[in-house]
Length: 109
Image 1 (cartoon, rainbow, N blue to C red):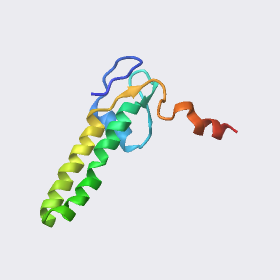
Image 2: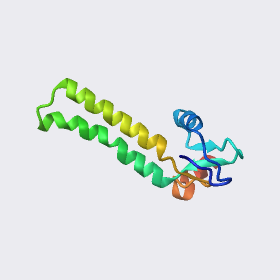
Image 3: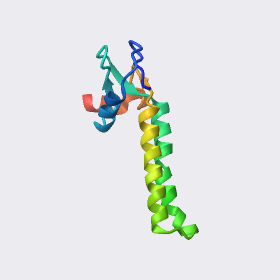
């Protein structure tokens, strides 16, 4: 489960789910209050998992698959994607998503 890099406290599932649904790249540790950021490794893993859906959309073009089978595959894929997103969260003390923080520097002007 998710662990704070500052205090080492494990986060419970409810807190991770709340932060996940907020679509916020920074998360406050429930124990020490320190701001934590999603790691770039985690972000890459999530993008790879999310790319599964467009690949599944292409399957009917190559194979004869019924609508019911496609609905079941999409449901399984959605559960797998959410699981990857929630159960493999990796945090960093610093925001490393944008090297050089170009957008922050532009906003400061």
